Image (cartoon, rainbow, N blue to C red; front, top):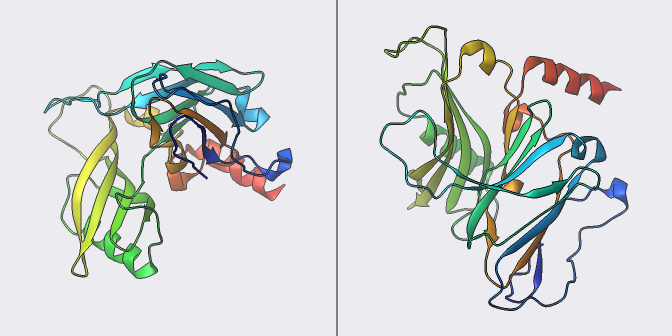
Length: 266
C-alpha cells in the first residue's frame, strides 16, 4: 500500500512475511517538512539473507548513454546498511526514480526493474499476455535466446523484463568464448485491439566469458523497482528476499537451482 502525500511517511513495499507476525500496514511517522530532502529507509528479510548482504545501492538509470558501449551506464548511490538488523537508510539524494540493488557475499544480486504501467495497475488477460509475447518476438533477432521474465500491466499497457542472450559466433574477437547478455524493460501499448512495442530500456548489458556467465546469480524483481523519491517524503520499504532467487526473474546458476529445489523438498 502506498500513500503519496507530501509531508507524510510512505510505506512503498509491504512484503514482511507472516512468519514475523506482522501484517503489511502503513507506517506512522512525524510529519516531514514539505521542502525536506528525500529520505529512504527500510529493512531486509529474512535473517539468513540479511546477514549475507554486503552492498545495498540505489540505481539511477536516467543517465545519458553512448551509441556504442559494452556496459550500461548507471549512477549508483550507496545506502547505509546494518547487517545485524537488516536496516538501511539514505538521505540527501536528488529527487528521482530509483531501483534498489542488493548484493550478497556469495555474489547473488537482487535488482529492481520498474514495471509500473503508465496508466495505473490492473490485470492482463491470458489473451493479452499471449499477444504481447507473440508481438515481442515476431521479428528475427541477433540473439539466439530470448524470453520474457515478468510481465505487468492492464488492458491498455504492458511492461516486461526481457532477457536476451547471444551464445553463437559473432564478428567480435575474444581470447575466450563469450556470450552477449542483456536485460531490458519493454513497454507495449494496445491500440485498436492490437499490441505494439512503444519503447525499451536496457537495464544491464554485459559480454562475460561463457564459463563465468554459467555462474551468474542475478535476478530482477519488479517490487524493488520504481522507487519514487520526492522532497517532503520519507519512504519506508520492507523487502522479503526469501525464495526470490528464481529463474523466473533472471539468471540462476545450476548449483544454486539444485539447492533451491532440494530445500523445497525438505
